[in-house]
Each structure stands twice: as structure tokens, then as C-alpha cells.
Length: 151
Image (cartoon, rainbow, N blue to C red):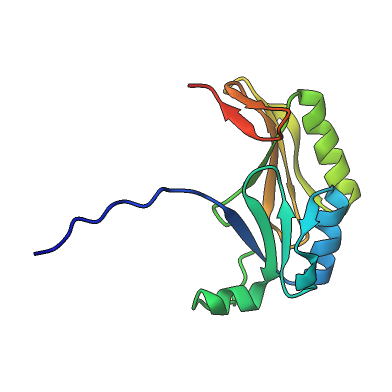
């Protein structure tokens, strides 16, 4: 007789990015203003407080090996994933894009109106991980830095 399994509580807690040069990536994310935690890990892994899920940086080849996947070839095309930096205003979107580029990001798309009534633009970090800076209807950024969704 088998017992019925109880579903665990779903949660997204950490987003780990594989990076080619951990030292350069740490410098980039430090420059963006994310708060690094657990600095005792040195350059083995870096953890950042983002106001939501933790952002982690880990050497690309080691992350691939840990997941039992090949680390080559590294994709040059879109990877099917974006990270979002939700903003409160259109001006903040433009400021985020300008700031990220000043810290070494590559601008992919300047801020522009969206077909859903929002405003967004895109940049890529030094390893090509795509970030969207966005303000969108129904999505509010609270004083707690967390995203609050309309019902």
C-alpha cells in the first residue's frame, strides 16, 4: 500500500548564473549596487541580496558539471530566459539602462513603450545574461523592494 505524497510548498529562492570570469562578474554586480552576502565564499561563488530571490554567480564550467551538462558550446543566441529589474516609472527604466551600461553592460534595446501599456528596455551582463528593465501595469514595486502583483 503506497502513501499519497504531499506536495512540497513551491518557492523560487535562488537564481544562479553561470559566469565565465567570476571576478569580473562580481565586480559588475557589485557596481550595479546589489548587496553581496556570505563574502566568506570568496571567488568560489557569490550571493547577492536582490530584495527577492537570491542572485548567485558561479563559474560556468563548474555549474554545468554540477548539473551534469556539457559547458560547451556556450550559447551566443537567446537562451530563453530573462531577469527582470522592475521599476516604478519610465524614467527609472531609462536610468537603470543607462546605469547598467555605464558599469559594463551591453544595451540590447533602449527603453520604449510596450504593447501592454508598460515601458521596457534590455541589457546584457558581461556573460550575455539578459536583463529587462521594466515598468508594467499591475506590477508594483513596494518600499520593501519586492514586486507586488495585482489580483
